Length: 222
Image 1 (cartoon, rainbow, N blue to C red):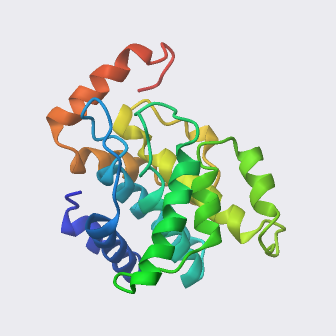
Image 2: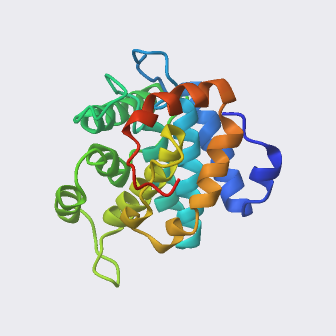
């Protein structure tokens, strides 16, 4: 993804550093399945934008370094094992297994080793499922914070909001802000739309938006 330097430099130093580290890692080491239709809507560019959104939200919510790393892992692996550009229920499960296998293999080879995070595995495993399903499954294996929500659930919610913020790549009407989970993400919608506009080639964006336009609700504000 071609991210303008002024956008990156406007972010907190922690976000800049982690974004650069993990976007570079994704481009060098993470393999995405090829998708039919030659549309760049679930591949590296999407994952990079989700990574930036997630790190911004996580930083504002004062996540620990380990939690931020788990969040980054979720972002760069979550759509690697898609079979198509539609709902493809089950691609989260496949991505989580790829992530687990990847961490194990890299650890054995000791070349570009990354640590396995259960929180990342769970967040990507359940990201294509309803929140109630993911929350219940994730709550079993993670320690709760002061509010009673597990760290795993918080990473899950932040990631799903970050993923949702990039729905603008599908059309300027495609994000329903009412379903965003965190207050921080609700303040990032303009940034998210602007990010899509400045990182996507105009002809590619038009091709996707033209495809989704027939599904635009008549009462949409956009």
